[in-house]
Image 1 (cartoon, one colour):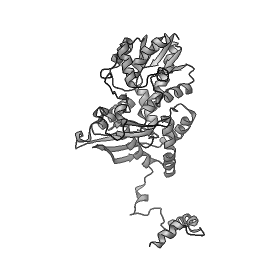
Image 2 (spheres, rainbow, N blue to C red):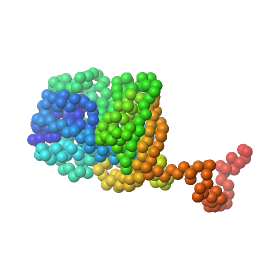
Image 3 (cartoon, rainbow, N blue to C red):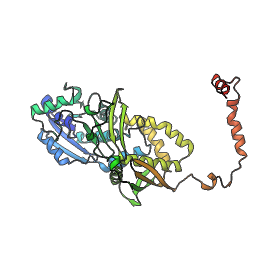
Image 4 (tube, rainbow, N blue to C red):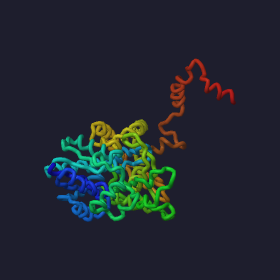
Length: 407
Protein backbone atom coordinates (compact mmCIF):
# COMPACT_ATOMS: atom_id res chain seq x y z
CA UNK A 1 0.00 0.00 0.00
CA UNK A 2 1.41 3.37 -0.97
CA UNK A 3 -0.70 5.68 1.20
CA UNK A 4 -3.09 5.53 4.15
CA UNK A 5 -5.18 8.28 5.80
CA UNK A 6 -5.44 7.88 9.56
CA UNK A 7 -8.06 9.56 11.75
CA UNK A 8 -5.60 11.00 14.27
CA UNK A 9 -6.45 12.17 17.78
CA UNK A 10 -2.92 12.50 19.09
CA UNK A 11 -3.51 10.01 21.89
CA UNK A 12 -1.60 6.82 22.66
CA UNK A 13 -3.41 4.55 20.20
CA UNK A 14 -3.15 6.75 17.11
CA UNK A 15 0.38 7.95 17.88
CA UNK A 16 1.60 4.36 17.98
CA UNK A 17 -0.54 3.62 14.92
CA UNK A 18 1.33 6.17 12.78
CA UNK A 19 4.63 4.41 13.41
CA UNK A 20 3.13 0.91 13.18
CA UNK A 21 1.28 1.56 9.90
CA UNK A 22 4.39 2.99 8.26
CA UNK A 23 6.46 -0.03 9.18
CA UNK A 24 3.86 -2.75 8.74
CA UNK A 25 2.51 -1.58 5.37
CA UNK A 26 5.65 0.20 4.13
CA UNK A 27 3.31 3.08 3.38
CA UNK A 28 3.05 6.84 3.60
CA UNK A 29 0.70 7.73 6.43
CA UNK A 30 -1.31 10.94 6.23
CA UNK A 31 -3.15 12.13 9.33
CA UNK A 32 -6.49 13.90 9.68
CA UNK A 33 -7.19 15.85 12.86
CA UNK A 34 -10.88 16.79 13.10
CA UNK A 35 -11.56 19.70 15.46
CA UNK A 36 -14.80 18.78 17.23
CA UNK A 37 -14.14 21.08 20.17
CA UNK A 38 -11.60 19.00 22.07
CA UNK A 39 -9.95 22.23 23.28
CA UNK A 40 -6.43 20.96 22.73
CA UNK A 41 -3.53 22.67 20.98
CA UNK A 42 -3.97 21.11 17.56
CA UNK A 43 -0.65 22.48 16.32
CA UNK A 44 1.08 20.50 19.09
CA UNK A 45 -0.87 17.40 18.05
CA UNK A 46 0.09 18.01 14.43
CA UNK A 47 3.74 18.29 15.41
CA UNK A 48 3.42 14.97 17.31
CA UNK A 49 2.08 13.25 14.19
CA UNK A 50 4.93 14.63 12.08
CA UNK A 51 7.48 13.55 14.70
CA UNK A 52 6.07 10.02 14.49
CA UNK A 53 6.50 9.94 10.73
CA UNK A 54 3.29 11.29 9.23
CA UNK A 55 3.75 12.34 5.61
CA UNK A 56 1.22 15.17 6.01
CA UNK A 57 -1.32 16.38 8.56
CA UNK A 58 -4.68 17.98 7.80
CA UNK A 59 -6.60 19.91 10.46
CA UNK A 60 -10.31 20.50 9.85
CA UNK A 61 -12.39 22.77 12.08
CA UNK A 62 -15.94 21.35 12.04
CA UNK A 63 -17.18 22.71 15.37
CA UNK A 64 -20.07 24.70 13.91
CA UNK A 65 -21.17 21.79 11.71
CA UNK A 66 -20.87 19.47 14.69
CA UNK A 67 -23.01 21.66 16.92
CA UNK A 68 -25.76 22.56 14.47
CA UNK A 69 -26.06 19.49 12.24
CA UNK A 70 -25.23 16.74 14.69
CA UNK A 71 -25.56 17.82 18.35
CA UNK A 72 -28.65 20.00 17.91
CA UNK A 73 -30.18 17.53 15.45
CA UNK A 74 -29.77 14.85 18.11
CA UNK A 75 -30.97 17.23 20.85
CA UNK A 76 -34.43 17.38 19.28
CA UNK A 77 -34.86 13.71 20.16
CA UNK A 78 -32.97 14.13 23.48
CA UNK A 79 -31.85 10.50 23.46
CA UNK A 80 -30.00 8.85 26.33
CA UNK A 81 -28.52 5.37 26.00
CA UNK A 82 -29.52 3.13 28.91
CA UNK A 83 -30.97 6.22 30.62
CA UNK A 84 -27.62 7.86 31.46
CA UNK A 85 -25.21 8.20 28.53
CA UNK A 86 -25.94 11.27 26.40
CA UNK A 87 -23.96 9.92 23.43
CA UNK A 88 -21.12 12.43 23.43
CA UNK A 89 -18.56 10.19 21.69
CA UNK A 90 -21.13 8.38 19.55
CA UNK A 91 -22.43 11.57 17.91
CA UNK A 92 -18.91 12.75 16.99
CA UNK A 93 -17.87 9.59 15.15
CA UNK A 94 -20.12 9.92 12.07
CA UNK A 95 -18.89 13.47 11.53
CA UNK A 96 -15.24 12.40 11.80
CA UNK A 97 -15.99 9.52 9.42
CA UNK A 98 -17.58 11.88 6.91
CA UNK A 99 -14.50 14.06 6.75
CA UNK A 100 -12.16 11.07 6.76
CA UNK A 101 -13.95 9.85 3.64
CA UNK A 102 -13.95 13.26 1.94
CA UNK A 103 -10.25 13.87 2.62
CA UNK A 104 -9.34 10.34 1.55
CA UNK A 105 -10.97 11.02 -1.82
CA UNK A 106 -9.12 14.33 -2.17
CA UNK A 107 -5.74 12.79 -1.33
CA UNK A 108 -6.28 9.68 -3.43
CA UNK A 109 -5.05 7.32 -0.71
CA UNK A 110 -5.49 3.59 -0.94
CA UNK A 111 -6.95 2.98 2.53
CA UNK A 112 -8.22 4.70 5.66
CA UNK A 113 -7.44 3.79 9.27
CA UNK A 114 -8.62 4.47 12.81
CA UNK A 115 -7.39 3.76 16.33
CA UNK A 116 -10.51 2.11 17.79
CA UNK A 117 -10.09 -1.13 19.72
CA UNK A 118 -11.55 -4.51 18.82
CA UNK A 119 -13.61 -4.55 22.02
CA UNK A 120 -15.02 -1.06 21.73
CA UNK A 121 -17.89 0.73 20.05
CA UNK A 122 -16.00 3.20 17.89
CA UNK A 123 -14.86 0.63 15.33
CA UNK A 124 -18.52 0.05 14.46
CA UNK A 125 -19.30 3.76 14.44
CA UNK A 126 -16.43 4.62 12.10
CA UNK A 127 -16.85 1.75 9.72
CA UNK A 128 -20.65 1.66 9.52
CA UNK A 129 -20.64 5.40 8.86
CA UNK A 130 -18.08 4.97 6.07
CA UNK A 131 -20.14 2.16 4.55
CA UNK A 132 -23.32 4.23 4.74
CA UNK A 133 -21.60 7.11 2.94
CA UNK A 134 -20.62 4.84 0.07
CA UNK A 135 -16.92 4.52 0.87
CA UNK A 136 -15.07 1.70 -0.85
CA UNK A 137 -11.76 2.39 0.88
CA UNK A 138 -10.32 -0.59 2.74
CA UNK A 139 -10.34 0.14 6.48
CA UNK A 140 -7.28 -0.71 8.56
CA UNK A 141 -7.92 -1.10 12.29
CA UNK A 142 -4.49 -1.68 13.90
CA UNK A 143 -6.03 -2.90 17.17
CA UNK A 144 -7.49 -5.84 15.23
CA UNK A 145 -4.13 -6.66 13.67
CA UNK A 146 -1.13 -5.78 15.75
CA UNK A 147 -1.37 -8.30 18.57
CA UNK A 148 -0.89 -5.91 21.48
CA UNK A 149 -3.06 -6.87 24.43
CA UNK A 150 -3.19 -3.68 26.44
CA UNK A 151 -2.43 0.01 26.55
CA UNK A 152 0.65 -0.88 28.60
CA UNK A 153 1.87 -2.88 25.59
CA UNK A 154 1.47 0.23 23.45
CA UNK A 155 3.51 2.28 25.89
CA UNK A 156 6.22 -0.39 25.79
CA UNK A 157 6.21 -0.30 21.97
CA UNK A 158 6.40 3.50 22.03
CA UNK A 159 9.37 3.42 24.40
CA UNK A 160 11.12 0.81 22.27
CA UNK A 161 10.68 2.70 18.99
CA UNK A 162 10.96 6.27 20.22
CA UNK A 163 7.34 7.16 19.48
CA UNK A 164 6.48 10.68 20.64
CA UNK A 165 3.55 10.65 23.07
CA UNK A 166 1.50 13.21 24.94
CA UNK A 167 3.01 14.16 28.28
CA UNK A 168 1.85 11.83 31.05
CA UNK A 169 0.84 8.99 28.72
CA UNK A 170 3.80 6.79 29.64
CA UNK A 171 2.61 6.25 33.20
CA UNK A 172 1.70 2.66 34.03
CA UNK A 173 -2.10 2.98 34.01
CA UNK A 174 -3.17 5.82 31.75
CA UNK A 175 -6.84 6.66 31.32
CA UNK A 176 -8.28 6.82 27.83
CA UNK A 177 -9.87 10.26 27.45
CA UNK A 178 -12.18 11.52 24.71
CA UNK A 179 -13.14 15.19 24.73
CA UNK A 180 -15.33 17.26 22.41
CA UNK A 181 -18.05 19.92 22.43
CA UNK A 182 -20.49 17.49 24.02
CA UNK A 183 -18.55 15.79 26.77
CA UNK A 184 -15.39 14.32 28.22
CA UNK A 185 -15.35 10.55 28.70
CA UNK A 186 -12.89 8.45 30.64
CA UNK A 187 -12.20 4.72 30.56
CA UNK A 188 -9.30 2.45 31.41
CA UNK A 189 -7.81 0.19 34.04
CA UNK A 190 -8.28 2.71 36.85
CA UNK A 191 -12.05 2.64 36.30
CA UNK A 192 -12.63 -1.02 35.58
CA UNK A 193 -13.43 -2.12 39.14
CA UNK A 194 -17.03 -0.87 39.71
CA UNK A 195 -16.67 -1.27 43.47
CA UNK A 196 -14.21 1.62 43.82
CA UNK A 197 -14.62 5.36 43.34
CA UNK A 198 -13.23 6.91 40.17
CA UNK A 199 -9.76 8.43 40.60
CA UNK A 200 -9.49 12.21 40.77
CA UNK A 201 -8.02 12.38 37.25
CA UNK A 202 -11.33 11.03 35.90
CA UNK A 203 -12.86 14.45 36.49
CA UNK A 204 -11.24 17.53 35.01
CA UNK A 205 -14.12 19.31 33.30
CA UNK A 206 -16.91 19.63 35.87
CA UNK A 207 -16.16 20.95 39.35
CA UNK A 208 -17.00 19.07 42.53
CA UNK A 209 -20.35 19.97 44.08
CA UNK A 210 -18.48 21.31 47.11
CA UNK A 211 -16.69 23.80 44.85
CA UNK A 212 -19.81 25.02 43.07
CA UNK A 213 -21.16 28.44 44.00
CA UNK A 214 -24.01 28.77 46.44
CA UNK A 215 -25.82 31.26 44.17
CA UNK A 216 -25.81 29.13 41.04
CA UNK A 217 -26.63 30.62 37.64
CA UNK A 218 -29.81 31.38 35.70
CA UNK A 219 -29.87 30.80 31.95
CA UNK A 220 -32.66 31.46 29.49
CA UNK A 221 -32.43 29.27 26.40
CA UNK A 222 -34.46 30.21 23.34
CA UNK A 223 -35.56 27.42 21.01
CA UNK A 224 -36.71 27.91 17.42
CA UNK A 225 -38.16 24.82 15.77
CA UNK A 226 -36.53 22.69 18.43
CA UNK A 227 -33.00 24.05 18.15
CA UNK A 228 -31.30 26.47 20.58
CA UNK A 229 -30.82 29.85 18.96
CA UNK A 230 -30.11 32.29 21.81
CA UNK A 231 -28.81 32.44 25.37
CA UNK A 232 -30.21 35.11 27.68
CA UNK A 233 -31.70 36.91 24.69
CA UNK A 234 -28.46 37.02 22.68
CA UNK A 235 -28.43 35.14 19.38
CA UNK A 236 -25.16 33.29 18.80
CA UNK A 237 -24.11 30.40 16.58
CA UNK A 238 -24.49 26.78 17.62
CA UNK A 239 -20.90 26.13 18.69
CA UNK A 240 -20.90 29.30 20.81
CA UNK A 241 -24.10 28.16 22.53
CA UNK A 242 -22.38 24.87 23.38
CA UNK A 243 -19.36 26.72 24.76
CA UNK A 244 -21.57 28.90 26.97
CA UNK A 245 -23.68 26.10 28.45
CA UNK A 246 -20.58 23.95 28.92
CA UNK A 247 -18.77 26.68 30.82
CA UNK A 248 -21.71 27.61 33.07
CA UNK A 249 -22.60 23.98 33.65
CA UNK A 250 -19.02 23.01 34.51
CA UNK A 251 -18.68 25.59 37.27
CA UNK A 252 -22.04 24.58 38.76
CA UNK A 253 -21.24 20.85 38.93
CA UNK A 254 -23.71 19.85 36.19
CA UNK A 255 -23.45 16.65 34.18
CA UNK A 256 -21.21 14.14 35.91
CA UNK A 257 -22.15 10.49 35.33
CA UNK A 258 -20.49 7.28 36.55
CA UNK A 259 -22.13 4.61 34.40
CA UNK A 260 -21.93 0.90 33.59
CA UNK A 261 -23.30 0.33 30.10
CA UNK A 262 -23.71 -2.42 27.52
CA UNK A 263 -21.29 -2.07 24.63
CA UNK A 264 -22.27 -2.82 21.03
CA UNK A 265 -20.91 -6.38 21.29
CA UNK A 266 -22.69 -7.00 24.61
CA UNK A 267 -20.01 -6.81 27.29
CA UNK A 268 -20.41 -4.37 30.17
CA UNK A 269 -18.16 -1.34 30.42
CA UNK A 270 -17.74 1.29 33.10
CA UNK A 271 -17.31 4.85 31.91
CA UNK A 272 -17.20 8.22 33.58
CA UNK A 273 -18.80 11.04 31.59
CA UNK A 274 -18.88 14.80 32.06
CA UNK A 275 -21.61 16.35 29.92
CA UNK A 276 -22.43 19.77 31.38
CA UNK A 277 -23.89 21.70 28.45
CA UNK A 278 -26.00 18.98 26.88
CA UNK A 279 -27.45 18.04 30.28
CA UNK A 280 -28.71 21.64 30.55
CA UNK A 281 -30.06 21.72 26.99
CA UNK A 282 -31.86 18.39 27.41
CA UNK A 283 -33.68 19.63 30.52
CA UNK A 284 -34.66 22.90 28.86
CA UNK A 285 -35.73 21.17 25.65
CA UNK A 286 -37.94 18.72 27.51
CA UNK A 287 -39.59 21.62 29.33
CA UNK A 288 -40.24 23.32 26.00
CA UNK A 289 -41.77 20.18 24.49
CA UNK A 290 -44.00 19.68 27.53
CA UNK A 291 -45.57 23.04 26.72
CA UNK A 292 -45.67 22.76 22.94
CA UNK A 293 -46.41 19.15 22.00
CA UNK A 294 -49.58 17.07 22.06
CA UNK A 295 -49.91 14.39 24.73
CA UNK A 296 -49.91 11.46 22.30
CA UNK A 297 -46.92 12.88 20.42
CA UNK A 298 -44.98 13.11 23.68
CA UNK A 299 -45.88 9.55 24.66
CA UNK A 300 -44.93 8.23 21.22
CA UNK A 301 -41.66 10.10 21.34
CA UNK A 302 -40.78 8.52 24.69
CA UNK A 303 -41.39 5.09 23.15
CA UNK A 304 -39.17 5.86 20.16
CA UNK A 305 -36.34 7.51 22.10
CA UNK A 306 -34.57 4.27 23.17
CA UNK A 307 -34.55 3.12 19.52
CA UNK A 308 -33.14 6.47 18.43
CA UNK A 309 -30.50 6.39 21.17
CA UNK A 310 -29.43 2.89 20.23
CA UNK A 311 -29.16 3.81 16.55
CA UNK A 312 -26.74 6.60 17.43
CA UNK A 313 -24.85 4.45 19.94
CA UNK A 314 -24.46 1.64 17.39
CA UNK A 315 -23.06 3.89 14.66
CA UNK A 316 -26.17 4.16 12.51
CA UNK A 317 -26.34 7.96 12.18
CA UNK A 318 -26.28 7.74 8.37
CA UNK A 319 -28.50 4.64 8.21
CA UNK A 320 -32.01 4.77 6.70
CA UNK A 321 -33.74 3.88 9.98
CA UNK A 322 -32.14 6.88 11.72
CA UNK A 323 -33.25 9.19 8.90
CA UNK A 324 -36.75 7.77 9.23
CA UNK A 325 -36.94 8.56 12.95
CA UNK A 326 -35.26 11.92 12.42
CA UNK A 327 -37.97 12.90 9.94
CA UNK A 328 -40.62 12.29 12.61
CA UNK A 329 -38.58 14.20 15.21
CA UNK A 330 -38.02 17.14 12.86
CA UNK A 331 -41.74 17.27 12.03
CA UNK A 332 -42.88 17.81 15.60
CA UNK A 333 -39.87 20.03 16.35
CA UNK A 334 -41.38 22.71 14.10
CA UNK A 335 -43.79 23.45 16.94
CA UNK A 336 -41.13 23.76 19.66
CA UNK A 337 -40.64 27.52 19.93
CA UNK A 338 -39.99 28.62 23.49
CA UNK A 339 -37.86 30.54 25.98
CA UNK A 340 -36.99 28.32 28.93
CA UNK A 341 -35.21 29.63 32.04
CA UNK A 342 -33.26 27.12 34.11
CA UNK A 343 -31.47 27.47 37.44
CA UNK A 344 -28.13 25.67 37.58
CA UNK A 345 -27.12 25.03 41.15
CA UNK A 346 -25.07 22.41 42.96
CA UNK A 347 -25.37 19.77 40.25
CA UNK A 348 -29.07 20.32 39.55
CA UNK A 349 -30.91 21.80 36.58
CA UNK A 350 -34.28 23.22 37.65
CA UNK A 351 -36.77 24.79 35.27
CA UNK A 352 -37.83 28.23 36.54
CA UNK A 353 -39.92 29.88 33.82
CA UNK A 354 -41.49 28.84 30.54
CA UNK A 355 -42.61 31.16 27.75
CA UNK A 356 -43.79 29.39 24.62
CA UNK A 357 -44.80 31.05 21.38
CA UNK A 358 -46.66 27.92 20.25
CA UNK A 359 -47.87 26.68 23.63
CA UNK A 360 -50.72 24.21 24.09
CA UNK A 361 -51.01 25.25 27.71
CA UNK A 362 -54.31 27.09 28.29
CA UNK A 363 -54.50 28.60 31.77
CA UNK A 364 -58.27 29.13 31.67
CA UNK A 365 -59.01 25.63 30.36
CA UNK A 366 -56.68 23.95 32.89
CA UNK A 367 -57.69 26.06 35.88
CA UNK A 368 -59.75 24.55 38.68
CA UNK A 369 -61.16 28.05 39.26
CA UNK A 370 -62.87 28.45 35.87
CA UNK A 371 -65.03 26.19 33.71
CA UNK A 372 -64.83 27.95 30.39
CA UNK A 373 -65.90 25.62 27.57
CA UNK A 374 -65.74 22.60 29.87
CA UNK A 375 -68.72 20.60 31.16
CA UNK A 376 -67.76 18.40 34.12
CA UNK A 377 -70.66 16.04 33.33
CA UNK A 378 -68.82 14.89 30.19
CA UNK A 379 -66.24 13.14 32.34
CA UNK A 380 -68.83 10.57 33.46
CA UNK A 381 -69.28 9.19 29.96
CA UNK A 382 -65.54 9.03 29.42
CA UNK A 383 -65.04 7.12 32.69
CA UNK A 384 -67.90 4.70 31.92
CA UNK A 385 -66.47 3.88 28.50
CA UNK A 386 -62.97 3.39 29.92
CA UNK A 387 -64.30 1.09 32.65
CA UNK A 388 -66.15 -1.34 30.34
CA UNK A 389 -63.20 -3.68 29.78
CA UNK A 390 -62.26 -3.61 33.48
CA UNK A 391 -65.74 -4.42 34.72
CA UNK A 392 -66.58 -7.07 32.13
CA UNK A 393 -64.25 -9.83 33.34
CA UNK A 394 -66.24 -12.92 34.44
CA UNK A 395 -64.04 -13.61 37.46
CA UNK A 396 -62.02 -11.45 39.78
CA UNK A 397 -58.33 -12.41 39.41
CA UNK A 398 -56.67 -14.18 42.35
CA UNK A 399 -54.47 -11.17 42.93
CA UNK A 400 -57.50 -8.97 43.53
CA UNK A 401 -59.21 -11.62 45.69
CA UNK A 402 -56.11 -11.61 47.88
CA UNK A 403 -56.16 -7.81 48.11
CA UNK A 404 -59.87 -7.74 48.99
CA UNK A 405 -59.45 -10.45 51.60
CA UNK A 406 -56.92 -8.31 53.40
CA UNK A 407 -59.27 -5.34 53.76
